[in-house]
Image (cartoon, rainbow, N blue to C red; front, side, top):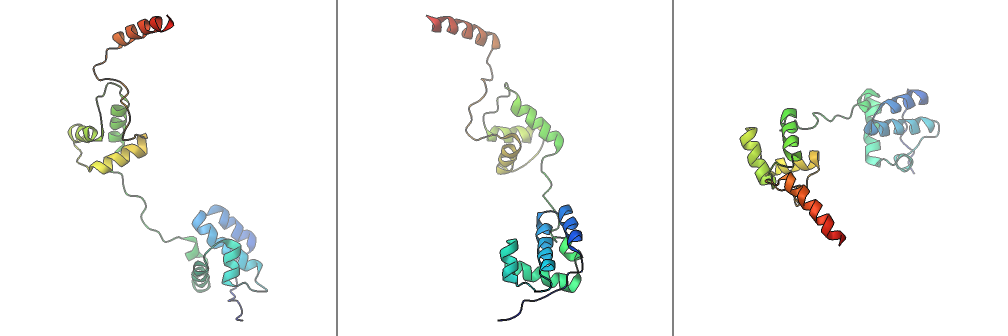
Length: 172
């Protein structure tokens, strides 16, 4: 049986723990691997044992050990992902106008198609239907089949009169 691949971890365990505390989940796993290697420095630890202890795939352990051996700890502290999230199609001002329109009980919006037409007309914004649907669902929690809050032309005085008479009739 082959001996485990040994590397010398130059940082101390307290230093590594401090780094681990400041880093996110992706980087934290890499530092956890280095801590385990440091603990088993005298006897050595195989990639399979490291994998069992840390819960990290053994292929990732091989890559990260080689990066550490060849280039040090700095490359391990960056995840290499570039960019970020796409910039939103809808600006903050447009977001607040849409929110105001959706929360208005007298708005008359009966579905996403009408909302899309309203956005094209009022905000002068041309966007795909599915983009608007997903945006509204994500930010406002809307659902496709939801009853309207109230009728567009409903008169509040008539509603109050109906409620007063219906309560009297229900008690008889």
